[in-house]
Amino acid sequence: MTTNADFRARLTGREPLVGAFIKTPHPIIIEVMARAGFDFLVVDAEHAPFDRGSTDTMVMAGRALGCPIVVRVPVATPDWVLSVLDAGAAGVMVPHVETVQQAEALAKSVAYGPGGRGFAGTTRAAEYAGRPLAEHLGKARNELALICQIEDPDGVVNHAGIAAVEGVDALFIGRADLAVSHGLDNFFAPEVAEMTRRILAVEGAATGLYCAPSEDLEGHRNAGGSFFVVGSEHTLIQGGGAALTKAFRQSFEP
Image (tube, rainbow, N blue to C red; front, side, top):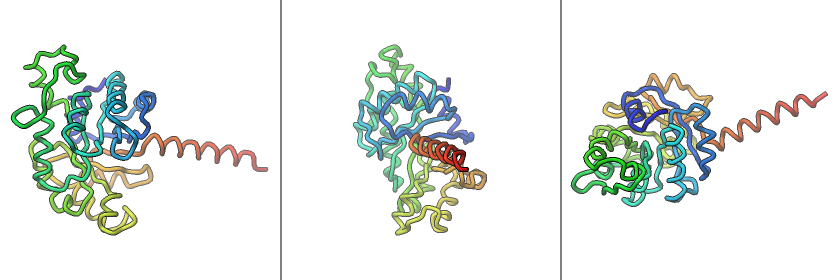
């Protein structure tokens, strides 16, 4: 069983980690994917049909199996971020972080203190009133990873400053949006590759990205990357199904 604190320690320690996106709002998907051996799973509430209720259920399933769940929120509004924290997620991934000021506000919002997150004892994160307030306040921040997504021109310019913000644990590179935001239609374009290398090498925070199985994983590791999302249940089902049907059809040929 991997605890949330274990996951954050491994992430910030830049241990090599492999994860997958989750696009289907049903906890059985978490059960199946967790048994595949992933180090973490990312519930994609930005691009898939998750609401607060379904997100909470996915986190519950992950915690039951000892599989850390990171939630990519659709927007960094206080209600979304707080709901993820109270659900007991291992991490929150925030898309389109472009400035140091935005990163500072996010770091403040996930920590207790003046102007920070509010406390409710009857949440999963607080063990449903099973944790004394002082104990929870002492442990909570070490049980949550804040991951800022860099995927816009301003984010690229400011990525080093964002990584240096106290409370920012990792940067995740969104190469598809990097390409689109720079007027490109290919996230393997040389311009995107150069930006990716610069961000992966940043000091002050762990770095990672989506990495297809056919990519140069060793190259990304050598550039400084340490955590990788390698697909989703959609790509795994499609890819596995396509390979299986192709093999069977070939066996039918005379």
